[in-house]
Image (cartoon, rainbow, N blue to C red; front, side, top):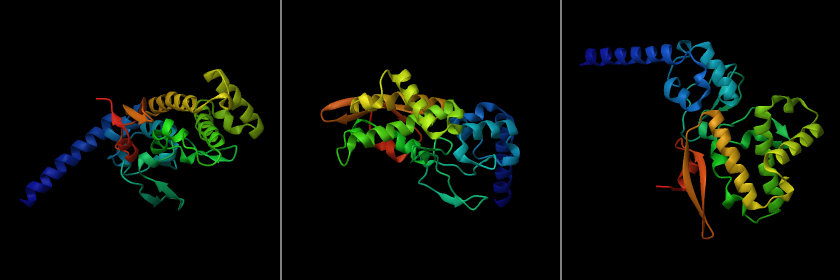
Length: 236
């Protein structure tokens, strides 16, 4: 019985290695869904350099020293020290979507699939504190990181110049400034950007319904098994 088990394990291992050698030699690894289904279980030595480079370019916060983190999952946050003795998030739902950047004093490491799923009308309608300023800051932080992902030179600009450039980009893309926007505008802006971010990162999505104050709002969220996905009603 033990011999049969060992033979079965060896066959399964060989099959996995074969898949790693054939499917993990492509820049399609930049797509998070593709990488998780094809290459996440692979030993790094069976993953081609092109695959690793494309994945790390698209998901820098899921890599260290140019290597994808091992054992990525959709489970609760699993924090382990990396090679530089820094804590790393191995749960992709809680991993930052963008390369680390502080913009106007705001840290973009809070922009994760979990966080982005919840930036909806219900969030923007919260009235505690200075709600308008909070909402503008939240939306602006997401937009700045999104623009910097498209135009990396933003990160190297003088802070004041970077702020001016983000202002221009916001008006060009949405037709008005955030200061001229209301809560429904914020909801719609994030919905549009959320779709673009998830598509660019190769994150599978779902269309769901949020009910708020008697109204329903169809929105797009990540579909990876994240905790926040349970907050919404399916469209079917």
